Amino acid sequence: MTEYGSEKMAEEERNSSAEKLKEKANNYFKDKDYENAIKYYTEALELNPTNAVYYSNRSLAYLRTECYGYALADATRALELDKNYIKGYYRRATSNMALGKFKAALKDYETVVRVRPNDKDAKMKYQECNKIVKQKAFERAIASDELKRSVVDSLDIENMTIEDDYTGPKLEDGKVTLKFMKELMDWFKDQKKLHRKFAYQILIQVKEVLSKLPSLVEISLKETEKITICGDTHGQYYDLLNIFELNSLPSPTNPYLFNGDFVDRGSFSVEVILTLFGFKLLYPEHFHLLRGNHETDNMNQMYGFEGEVKAKYTAQMFQLFSEVFQWLPLAQCINNKVLVMHGGLFSEDGVTLDDIRKIDRNRQPPDSGPMCDLLWSDPQPQNGRSISKRGVSCQFGPDVTEHFLEQNKLQYIVRSHEVKAEGYEVTHSGKCITVFSAPNYCDQMGNKGAYIHLRGSDLKPEFHQFIAVPHPNVKPMAYANSLMQLGMM
Image (tube, rainbow, N blue to C red):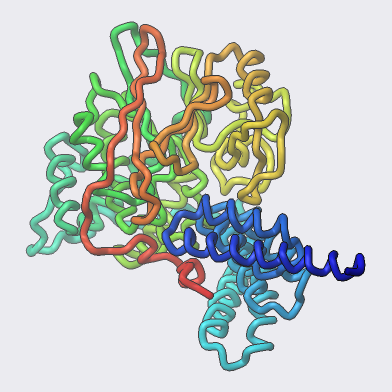
């Protein structure tokens, strides 16, 4: 047999093995086991690195695990290999949408519509994306920081009437009480709506409380005291109630810290955030909230919170939520030893606690720099830093963590931001802890949730796991932008 013939046979064998791996990956994908799907698509690509379909399939699996940076890279590679591969444009557009890069997404949707003029789905996505791009341009044109008035100035709370048929919880003299909070949680549990007058009062008061806090909140636990740290709750209201059931309600002797991403994805975000804000007003010194990357306009526009507030209340109320979110602190330090933030550490060395204190946080987060990193970065197992799988900020290794802790005389960091099968994960030799409190995330990940107890005596983390509880039949992402309903090609 000629050398060419044997090479050809070897190549055919490789391609055949790659196809089998792709089928295996597809089956894992169907079972929503995206990690294994990614693993076998990757193995298929090692055998046949010029197959656009494999890249495109892996791109979709990355989208499902929120690795938007990797999804974008794979979709781009698929199109480099085959510029006529329509699914590649779809994938790349979705990745760019997820990253808030609407103009880039619009370009790809345009291509799809041009090639497939009768594709209704493509046409709808193109129109929707075009609408967002125009809206953003309009907002930029009228935005002037000096003239930006607060929604609060245009509200006449005193004269909002409470209809006779409203039988729900009421603020007493405009103040949150424990009785109100218990009634509120039961009311929300029955899928009923808090009267807009009280929702507005809570938002105005919590804005006042949060705006007086520093960007880095510092607290001390006495030897005998403990605090409970919770990770992302993402609009999973019934799981939040379960945390309070398992771990008791917040109180001055049972303080809590919720580490960002209260809203989006889960379709009970309004209930989650109003409950958390209510407890912040009731126990301002013992109930702590930090900002997550989802307490931002771009994310809320895509992943459901804006749509949910508009459906349950008004666009004006969403504007007020947006103002309040900008005042959420970015990090919390416990006993000068443990630093808590939503995302993680920084794209550059040398950032100090003092630098965090100096961050001017009352704004939408920038695309880079310390504020962006605190909300977006992720740990990685290898030393150094690498490009983020999310397409925003970076990934940081054990050496980065070690160096940061040493410089700032800290013991370890606690962060959230990532789904973990067990609800938590300890990495970087115990110095980087992830906690995630939305079990069976988006009704499909099958993960446990967790929260952490920290005691003043030793600051040794104690992990408590829990599983998802049933919720009313409202699907996650019910209010999300139609472009993010990922059941696409």
